[in-house]
Image 1 (cartoon, rainbow, N blue to C red):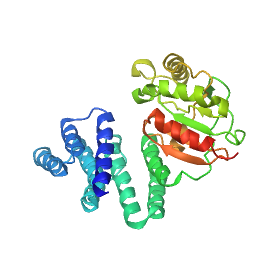
Image 2: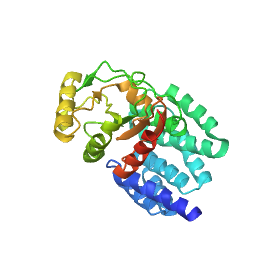
Image 3: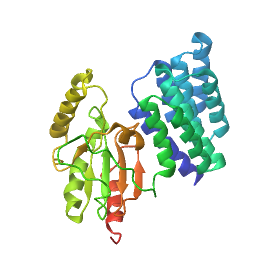
Image 4: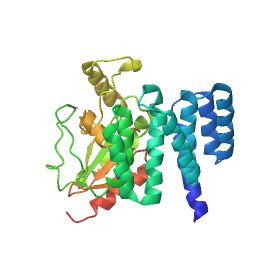
Length: 305
């Protein structure tokens, strides 16, 4: 069982590595070592870098990866040491330190859950969320809170005032019908890769009452990743949805920044499945296989209204 758990952790880490955005050479080396389960070599690379370059953004991001890797590889003492170093070095919330700071908070939350239980971890993360100012950092912290506590809770409502496509309905009005949230971003490749499976799920389960909604938010960019006004970005989102997500014309695209933060959308796509009573039954901040989504949907559909 321990070998199986380790394998799952390594596969999860390898997935994070494969989908992470481009970074500097040190971070790339550390990620590759961790995806192979080789924490020691990653540590050695980081130590060498520090002797040559001192503490900079690249170093701190690499230490953040070491913290995540050590926690996933079931080495909590090592993970705690890396978190402590990040906390010593990062004194304030600066844009260039957000990735490393987010890693420190995320790993400390996981360590607290492991050591003191879920309640302690959630309390810690809620405190960090209240202090955070950057939207991406707040979303990352909320994602970790949600992973510990959202399932089994009443689904947070979305602000439905801004949308594309059919007029969306509130979860309160949709009670009696299961709802699948596909939380996405117009620039997200993994989201686009889900388009076909999502369209097939809509076609397969629509007659059984499944409602699908696709919340997103304004990111300040449009075509070619150029800076865009909200009106320009909304037009681009509509174009992307129409051209890249065929078969989903019946799905309302809700534009709600606060809702995206509340659902912890720091990674896209993120999925949330809500049952007939308005309770979140499944939350997953990652791309999912069609078979897994079908299994989850069918379990909720099978329940007595």
